[in-house]
Length: 258
Figure 1 (cartoon, rainbow, N blue to C red):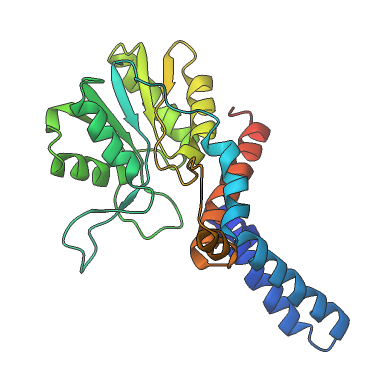
Figure 2 (figure 1 turned 90 degrees about the vertical axis):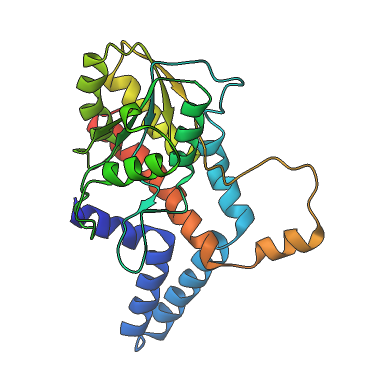
C-alpha cells in the first residue's frame, strides 16, 4: 500500500514534473533528450497548472452524481474518511483539511433531521504519519460541531475506499439500515458510490456529495479568465486529486471492486 501510494505520487502531475526535470538533469550530456524532458515538464506544468484544464478534467467526476433537492431522509449518514488533520502540535485540536467539507456537511445533514446517526469511517493508512484512526478525528470534529456522542458510530479499520464499504457493511446490517446518505467529496463520489453499491446491493444508497471545485457561473471577468490560465501550485494539487480518482476508478475495476 505504501509503495503503491509512492509510485502513484510520482505518476501524478506534480510528481511527474519533478521526475522529468531530474531525468533531464541526469541526462544533461544528451542534449536533445534532456531538452525534450524539460519541454515535457513545462507542458505538464502549463496544462495541469491551468485552472480551466483542471476544471475540464474534474467536471465529469464532480457532476456525475449531483445531489437530489431535497435530499430524502435516511437511516444513517455515512461520512467517509479523510478531510481532517490530526491534533499535532502546535494545532490545538483536530482541524479540517481542504476536503473537510464532508465532515461539516454530515453534521449539517444530521441537524437537518436527515438521519438518526452518522457512521464515520477511516483507519490508520500505511505510509502516513497518522498514529490513530482517522474516524476518531472525524468523531472529535462532529462533537465539536454539536453532534451528540450518541449519534456517532465509528468504523476505525478501513485503509481505503473499498475497505470503507467492506467494514461498514456489518455495522449497517446490525443496525438494520435500509437507506443511507453517502457523504464524500464530489470527485470521490463516483468511486465511493460504486464500491458501496457493490458491497451493499440490498441497500438504497443516496449520494450526498460536497466539496465541489467546479461550479456553474454564467459570466466570468476577463481578469479571472486570464488569471486561471497562469499555472499555480493550487491547480497542480487539484489535478493530482482528480487524476488520482481516474486512476482509482481504473484500478478498482481491475480488482473487481466496482
